[in-house]
Length: 111
Image (cartoon, rainbow, N blue to C red; front, side, top):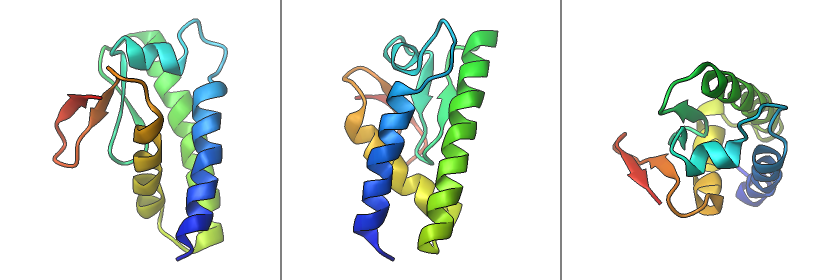
């Protein structure tokens, strides 16, 4: 496994995840900071305060991440699960204070 190559790929993913939210009135950063979405320990987002808009945003973000994880997985010979977990660590390092995230034990915490 080429960990440095995977980590470089996650820098790109993090940028995509933060700056390329779809054209929803709700964006990923504000959804995180308001506790609507949280970062799961598998590299995907979860809806913490359900609404149609939150569900749509989560589905869009997760679809984009899954596609990117699949690309990285194929390039590095790693499973999607491994790639997602490495991405989760990278994303957690970038989220703002107060954002919700899922700990290794599955419980929800605030950064």
